[in-house]
Length: 435
Image (cartoon, rainbow, N blue to C red; front, top):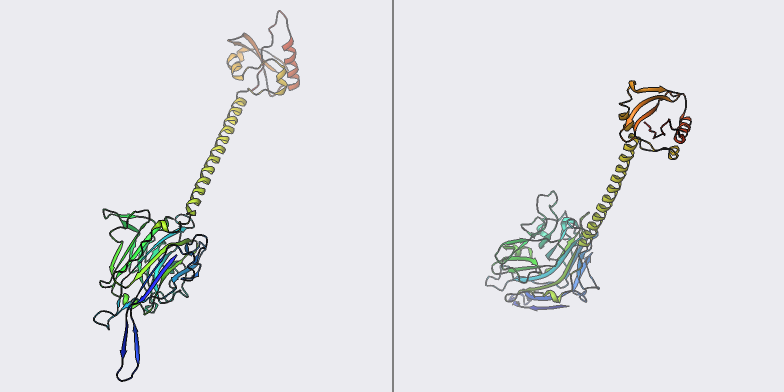
């Protein structure tokens, strides 16, 4: 719910002795507002482009994750920051202001988000003609750098380079004066309790708090940014710079708000969970925005996608392992089959009804390599050799030659006959072999 208050501090009335006319000089006015979520505040926040206040959770979404879109969201009432209340009334000073907001950036996929957003002081509550991608919905290629822009922005940039890559690094904070070539930029980090820098990521999907504080008398701007998981705000800001030219940018009336953009193939959803602002008056301090009072951060779907991708990779690895194991088993069976063929151990169908078979190697050794001196006869099928088996004693081995006068059927019939032959003067058929 938003709470807003505006007070007019000073009206100076001048009566001209020559013209009898009254002129009113409007001076800086205090402005305070706090939005702990944005539900029901559509009339107080002016949105354009892809920006919208979501009715479901009250988050202010600056962009969705469509490509090449821009979104702007500005506080609907103008604020006055010019201060002439000091002694030299002709000089223009900018009064102090302070703002705090909590945001979340969720990329379309880890490491592929874009392009970031800005907190902006603008002369209009919208940015007509602003382009997407590196122009962040704030400027365009034609007016970038023009002094007539009258815009000051703190950019929260997530993409490396600008145009030809000569300007900025990704994941940084920058100060922009009328253009998006940052005058000051710092890689994203915060100072811990020992004043050491701790880096973190704008696109981590976690909620992040930004504090921007400008001190008018010293013209010093401080920017502090840190994850909301930290209990306390860091004592040392990430950026602390004296800015003397802000009075040249700020007009009589300015609007405060946010701009954001996505690019080609690099997209992020940019959300603001809560926002507070205070300006002018004595030491203005924006509300600290307790996280417990803000709507919950949107789910980081990019991490979910990462988990899904990881699961798919694991499933693919398991599948490949199974296929590899199956192929190895097939290879093993093939090798064994080939070895059996080479060793002559594969039986033909017709051999199953006949006496057992010895390996060719056994008979080769038993006949002393089928030496000619061991020939004891010859027939239509081939030559008969004398041999000796350690397990059976003396044997006769008939070796069938390729030029045999008879075929396999006749050979099978002979084996069957010999296998059944029984006589006291003969030995039974022990076996057969195949080369």
